[in-house]
Length: 136
Image (cartoon, rainbow, N blue to C red; front, side, top):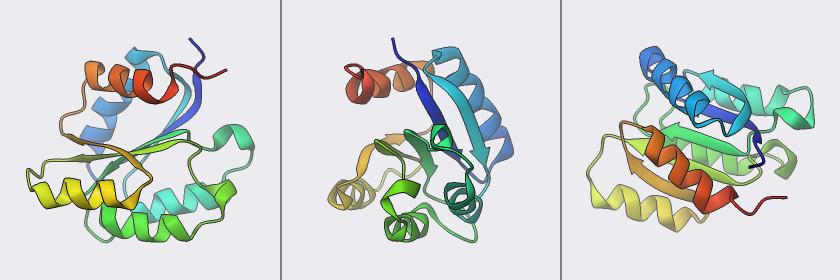
């Protein structure tokens, strides 16, 4: 299995980021995990990373965050130059059971999955299998 270079976790809850980082670490799918607590921090990271290996290939994005929601992050993310974006997929994490959120995410075209929190090992493995299994 070829590991991803980087996974980016975006959630305003430090404990959630901590748990998600442990889960992604246990899944053993990446060389590096970056956790930030806001969309602003995530955009800053994407714009100022120092080398290509730091570009996330997978982003787990919380929808409901103060200051900049996941939706607002995606609006700004879309404006980034291609070389500052994730190489493969954004996965939205939410507590929302509202079907319109899922529909909105799918319509964006670059959101690979929309999953209900909490993140768990099985979900991480399913996402890796679905999007990265055949990587060279």
